[in-house]
Amino acid sequence: MKLLILTQYYPPEIGAPQNRLHELAVRLKKEGIDVEVLTAMPNYPKMEVFEKYKDGSIREEEIEGIKVYRSKIYVSKSKSIIPRLLNYFSFVWTSYWRGRKLPKYDFLMVESPPLFLGYSAMRLSKKLKAKLIFNVSDLWPESAEKMGVVNNKQLLNLAYRLEKKCYHRATIVTGQTQGIVDNINARFPSVKTFWLPNGVDVNFYQPDKIDEGDFRKRAGLNPSDIVFFYGGILGHAQGLNVVLEAAKLVEKNEKIKIVLQGAGPEKEELLKLKEDLQLTNVVFMPPVAKSEMPAILKSVNVALVPLRKLDLFQGAIPSKIFEALAMKKPLLLGVDGEARRHFIDSAKAGAFFEPENIEDLANKLVEMADNPEGLIEMGENARSYVSEHFNRDNIAKNFQDVLRSN
Image (cartoon, rainbow, N blue to C red; front, side, top):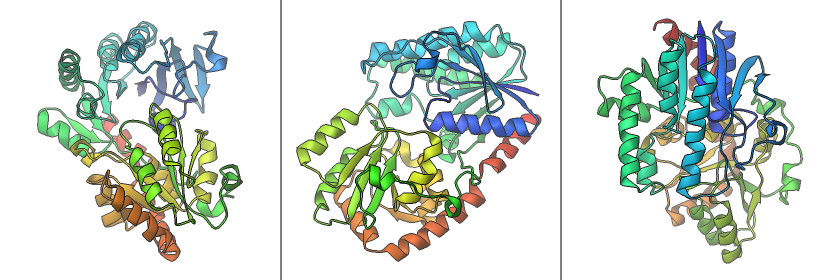
């Protein structure tokens, strides 16, 4: 059986979809499926093609046994809508012309967002005689509309029509969370769906075998500090301004420190807010390679995971949750709905604060910092829960069964 994964984002880029898709590809290959990837020249998150790829000579490569085909993409550091659309549509165009020269496949699995890649996926699946699998990791354009990222009615109508067409063309529509699957089932009851969750490699994240390294030293933190750590995109959806506002309320508690590690469209605004609030208890750190994350997570006390207060996020499970829990780190979770039910109510692996509620977040920061023994107990619960319910090996085996039955 042959599977082609079509995605705009893939290693050596750093990020949630990059890691998730590559980990799935590697495991499916171990299960006997011939997996290949069609993707763009790596450029995310700095929106600049990586140095070794700039001359365009690397059009094929192998990453951990997975053959990767690359096509050109337009990149720009501008945040305006036109350059962003050019970024998406350039890869739609180049991925089709690159992909149409590839051999036949049994399945073509496309990652959305960006939703517009569905144009290329539908044409390529027909050209390559492959059954289409449409993998939804975020309900676009619904999320873009509700967050106010896209307000153009014509563009939104175009996107909603494309979404409907992609779902009906697909043999299977996979959703990263049960909430995404339920949303699709409610709007398109005739579409065949499957929950393909994110997860964690529990063999890679082994807290009892990892040295925490020098992260605290590099971040200017003391050994006695209680460190609340956010690692990921500094973007619109996370509402990280709330974290800085809460940090201001707890600044007299000298043991509480907050680290925001990553890059993204909101970083400059957040840095400005830190300066305006004159915060000394918040540290910004640059993004790092996946290989560095176990040691970093080992050295912090709590994983801080916020999202904005939108009904859309009731079904969201940010991917950063899984690695933190596997490293026995409790959550301070500002995500209601599915994530809260799994990791707070069922796993007893952390504390919940109401999304975008500054005072509630500040209170939970103090409560967790004052209960170090409770943090250890929640961390043990965390590792047990993700090992049982979100092990990447089991997820891949279940998906392989679905492929073989279709």
